[in-house]
Length: 330
Ligand SMILES: [Mn+2]
Image 1 (cartoon, rainbow, N blue to C red):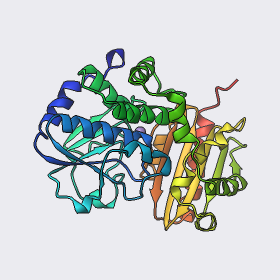
Image 2 (image 1 turned 30 degrees about the vertical axis):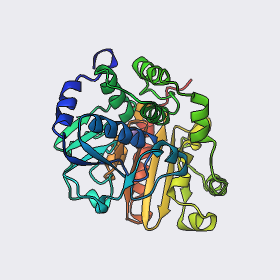
Image 3 (image 1 turned 60 degrees about the horizontal axis):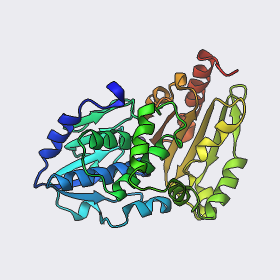
Image 4 (image 1 turned 90 degrees about the vertical axis):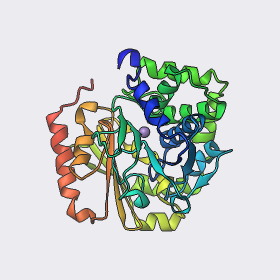
């Protein structure tokens, strides 16, 4: 990856060319985020431009309110309503991430940036060093001087800022900012966009946040902090999993906390999310022990199992990792 560019750009467009004239479904992951939406829309435009017949797939867990504006002017489809010849998957590190419908399907194309590198499609473009799947696609588009409409620029920009904590993560390279700058050049208004993403929260979310803040437990000499959201927290506030987006970041704002975690129990699914500012802690490796994945500083896993069956092992693994990697914080 010289100059921050992704070198497999020709191969990527060759693979996309193979979809000419074909009905293609484009899917992101369940609990969809800005990066997956942006990547879906960018890939849609690429395939349309290359004379394919792409369809955007609505994630089975729905679209969070703050991301709906990105789909304006686009039609969304349920996978079961379509007859599709090939599937393309974006921003999914595991074959289970696109959702139940896709579990036994082999996608034609995967574009992703998660660890472990899970090449579950026929053609895989996986770059764990990329800050976002949107960064990979934005770079491909720029390298080929591909036309980028304002709505595509907007979607890619939103994906970039949301997957980088507004350009604050170590995954951000100078080239990431240059890509963002080129997208802004399409006439985007960063503050208006940020307001649309971050300042349109429903009030119920703050009732859920209140419960989350009260649930915190500290471990490992206060270097690990977990918050908990149970079925009843969602029921009593009228919230679902989407409303807890971003909560996991709060505990790591506390001085001395090196890993923050969130355990969510919703409709029989347990979701564990982990965050840190220290890539040496390799949270993706810890998540992999529980059949999950992610990135060094942001990882997680889903399981139907009761927390009793994995909790001690999880806390033990995190504690051990914290001891092994002593803090470099001054
Ligand atoms: Mn992503």
